[in-house]
Image (cartoon, rainbow, N blue to C red; front, top):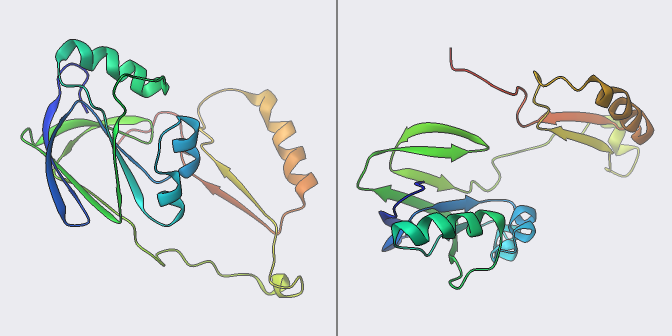
Length: 182
């Protein structure tokens, strides 16, 4: 949330309210990412919860150094504070903050609410999957970032898709490199 000084935050996780000072709050819904950075909470995420990680530093200097260690996954003297739950709300005294969301920075107005919605996604399986015992092969491509010129990557990608012989190709995530609001 901020690089130089910690914020006074009011954090509510599944109805439990707490007041904390932290320069950064990370809400994660990917067990894989948590494991890559050696953070706790991956098991809770696999069980359908969100993980909230709060950086522990409180002074401007330690905040700057700690954030670098925190983001790189390097060990620190103090481990980040971890909370898990289905609903997380984060409020700060300052109502407008620059928020990094999925790799993009933007100014947003708080409070910031995160919720898991069980059953929010339903997948309809094509009839031909029934012939395979209800199973189907799919290829999921994410974060294509069109606008970034790397044409040499296209032929191997298409070859990989053809080799997989999928029933369905799903494209999700960041479609463009630098999107602008119109």
